[in-house]
Image 1 (spheres, one colour):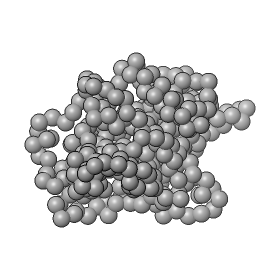
Image 2 (cartoon, helix red, strand yellow):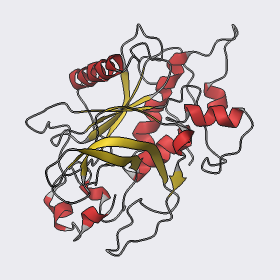
Image 3 (spheres, helix red, strand yellow):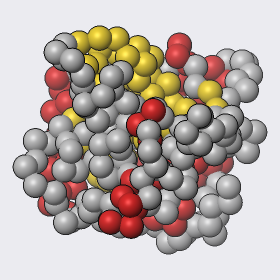
Length: 291
């Protein structure tokens, strides 16, 4: 993926204007040998260019989600987390959105890099879980893999087109969305979905419990290593990981946490519109047999 650069986003007044985002350039130390962590915000402009499904949140909403993120981190003894990207998901049926946040030091406020629509678990059918809440660590202990791009019996590419990355978060306790409910183990993943038949439906609950994301966001997360801190550590130690592409540009602020919250909203905000009638009309039969 060739990411063409833009002038630095607000909040990065001393960052250089890049003609192309290059990890080595972005991470280059200054004369004092220090890498300015505010360069991490350069990814705002790349997100705005490369991610085709985006949500535009008002500033007040961005701050509100920053507070939800901090509260979740506090509850998991990660309140001082900083210096790395964090992915936040609101599973609320009226929102269905994913956000990338960053802050340089614990004293700073979390600031949003970008946001996109998602689909999380829809209850009501067998083997469908409500996407679990909490803080989930993305670690090579549950090694990611890539989509083969094959269709199931209903002609749905559940993991999206070939070569899309599946971010595997391992086994998690999920609330069953069928029968009498209760909790069971589910395999929790974040991944792309069928680009033609299911991606247009992002923005409503529609998965079996995983987090479905746009293909362009999948590529963005993959290329810049937004969640690859622990993968990068393995590579630095000399290991070769086939799941990482040779042209990747993992940045020094790579993170490792996906946080799932529920904002408890009772109505849908204007900045997170539901799929339109045209998209819903094309909803394939048995679509929820895909992850």
